[in-house]
Image 1: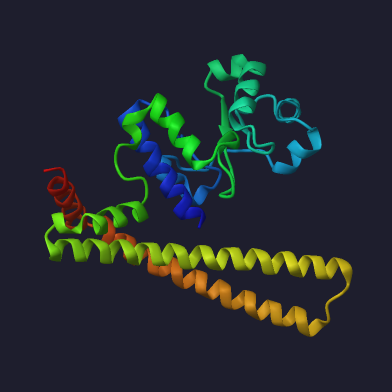
Image 2: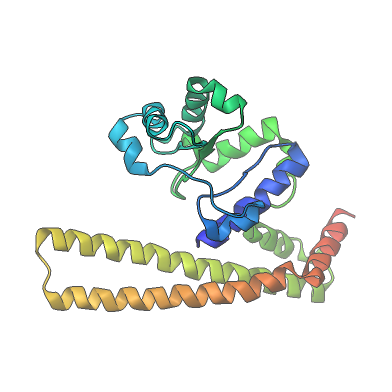
Length: 251
């Protein structure tokens, strides 16, 4: 999942750089996915726990700076859900670092919410107002699939069928992975609660472990399937097919 997220961020960042002149993402925290951003290693960051302990993002940055005064600083800005406000507050607190390019911010916003309390509709409104060129194309593979299906009569039937087939396969892999991820999180939460309360017999915990192992196996399979399906979707033939469909739809 981390690899898919990093790749998606890199692709979206490249589009924003190309279409809107944005700086975009410059790296990630993990060495394994640093290559997506042209880096050899991940960029340092701070743990969520430090910000919770400090009580504010700015204070956490100050504490980090006190301990590592000579290091570039990457500040986690999503702990309180004030990604934009806290990023600006940190930049104002450390203007010299920001001016020297030694201050960066890391976003780890969960999928359950959007940046600075936005929802999907308001997020698109902000982008539409300030950088409309960055969202003129389709927004997700799911949306592209439904657009192709909805306006199917405009396209060559064979080309449309193949495009929808590839998009559906991609969605199925992502959906399978995410479903297993949600179920694993719930099982882990239940197990942690039961262990804390000493309320579960050993047999129950063992059974939960077996279920978790099965879900992990499903995730690995979905991840492996995704590699092949994404390769098919990203192949020159597939991209040429989608470009042809777009030209036909616009004609």
